Amino acid sequence: MGKKIQCIGRYTLEGHLLGKGSFARVELAHHSVTGCKSFKILNKSMLGGDKEKQKKERRGKEKARV
View (tube, rainbow, N blue to C red):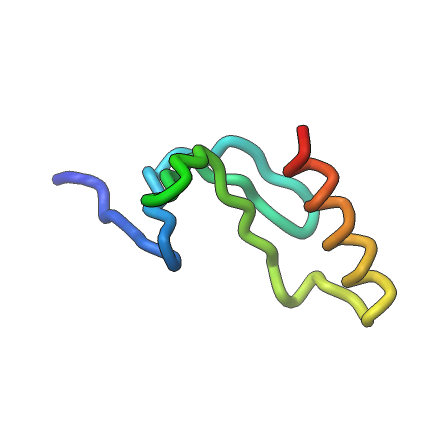
């Protein structure tokens, strides 16, 4: 039996977990336009208030630059 392909927006998840943290996981994915190869999925229940949300968004943007 093959893996179920899941699409989120223009990303196609390839079914391979790259890493997992306390509030998110990173999966191998392919963006149909840019060819980007990873996708971070946040756990909504772990997100805090506005201040905590801004901190996590900033951290995500910093990692995207790497």
